[in-house]
Length: 325
Image (cartoon, rainbow, N blue to C red; front, side, top):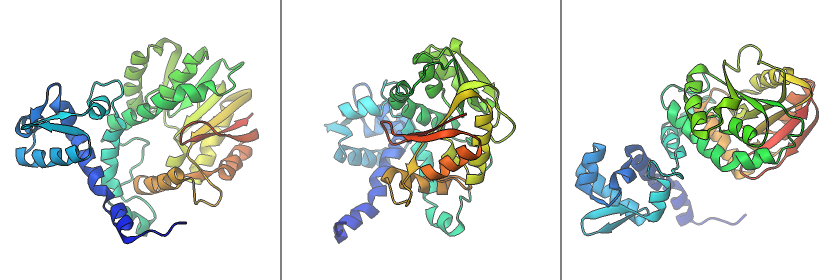
């Protein structure tokens, strides 16, 4: 490994400054305020309910970051910001709103390391505060990966799919678009209120059933040819995941498959970088969440009676683990 110099270490330590400026601008919806023809700092500040001088200072840094341009007294979005950071754009990065909420929990990392858990954790998969932003972030990720990943699965003979913790329904919809006749989105009732709106936007709601419930409690409906769990196991403790996988396996038809999609950390837990970093995200945001190795997931699946458990590497930062009943 290459030795780092003091300046590189300083840049790593100061990285939070640019990050927070961008996330605050997104939280204020400052980029949208500049559209369509640019605004002075005072005009933009009035639109977002902020102080004019402070807004000018933030816009100056955003200019140095290449996200806004300045002509005379007026600031306007660059093409990049217009594409990614203005609400209403088809490629708007809605996940950054959720990342802004994450900032607050990450700021308590030292306390979490000392305690071994998040002091802010409360029961429930999605906290009420920031729920819409959280689901929007999940949809942003699904929109870039779901269709390609689902098409890469062997869906021959799959007539129905259960998507556990469906969130926006982005993955549920991908199964239907891939030719599965029927799918079920399972999530908390308050989340499904948001799911319904996304499915209407996707235009596939007539082929998807919504079932409310808590995946920590009771059995899933069934039987299904495929049970899918995306971005769920990292929220839970190993004991909770063993029970979750058991309930998922019980909801399968004979010959059906349970597919887990998540960040899979290496057996020595030193990589890949996104997986080890996400373990910290779970430390500061959950009671006992983590990223898990293939061996750990295979153990849960085999204990639930699944066979032929295998790792399937797919495009993106998360991979699949599949087992057959």
